Image (cartoon, rainbow, N blue to C red):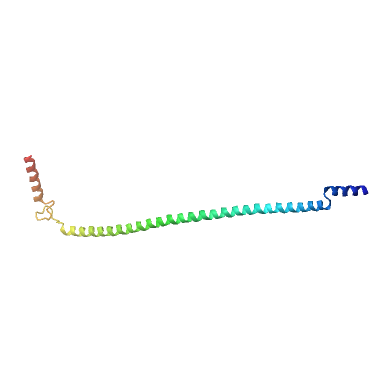
Length: 144
């Protein structure tokens, strides 16, 4: 048994004694801590990447909202101009409808109900007017 203990002590002495054993434990702890710090660093890098992606997405959404608001503003302006144009056309239509109604009323009062009346004004369709028109046509044909 003493041989075993001697061999172990010799082995430990060869490695560096108790200082070497403590160095191995300290190196293991430092190595473990370095790996832990490396894992923390990679986790932080992943989180930073996620934060950057989130900020970029927010910026893209804000730009999309601004673009959408500009499009809506343009469409609102177009709608307002069309409503103005519609109002102007409706006013014009009302004026023309009023004019048509007034002219129809005037036409009814000016209409001569007697067919072939020589006193008709205007003399459209009266017997004298058709006769004079035929005479004028005959005179122009003879002159040619």
